[in-house]
Amino acid sequence: MTMPALETRRWSADDVRALPDTPGQRFECVDGALLVTPSPTRSHQWMIADLLRMLEAYARAEGVGTALMAPSDVELDAHTLVQPDLYVLPLVDGRRPYDDAEVGVPLLFIEVLSPSTSRFDRVVKRQRYQRQGIEYWIVDLDARLVERWLPTATSPEIISGTITWQPVGAGTMLSLDVAPLFNEAMGVPPDMTRSLLPRRKPTA
Image (cartoon, rainbow, N blue to C red; front, side, top):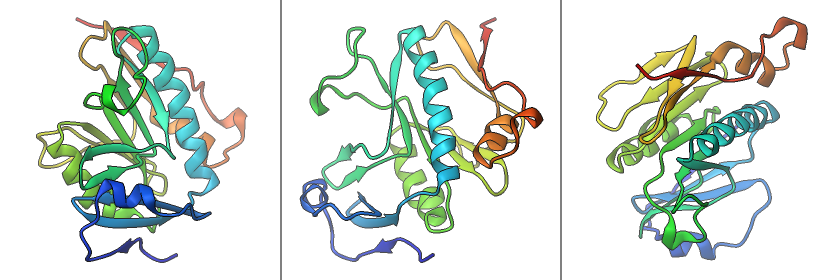
């Protein structure tokens, strides 16, 4: 599989929106650079589907946010339009944002690596997401781990056991076991996995 195309022209969010829909391709731009990536694999999508279910249930129950998955645009500035695999937006007066004008700073971005997106997820997007002040998880299916980047971090937290998340305003902490998530995504038989139900930890 080839690497995503990176063109020298300075693209805007409006330029990317004007591109014709092309089956099997996702178009984004980061700081004016166009990124074109192929359709994800089934394992990639299964991982995102499980995370979406868990994060949406948690964020809505805590009254702090709502989760979405690609394809769905997030415009960070006039020259940065991205489609994170999964992201959590803050609620607006207790409800989901109605349109782009109501979207605040996302609470969390998640990208699932593939051979064709690794460089952009780990470098180009990661640096841009950090500048925006967004917590960022990179899910590595091959290595069966999650790289967790906080906005001010110079290196990621490498997680292969349990990942926790507690955004501002949440009264409890979400705790996710990473191993069963990878087992499910990679097709390990159900009797060899543990429960995928997330756990909440009370704050101290």
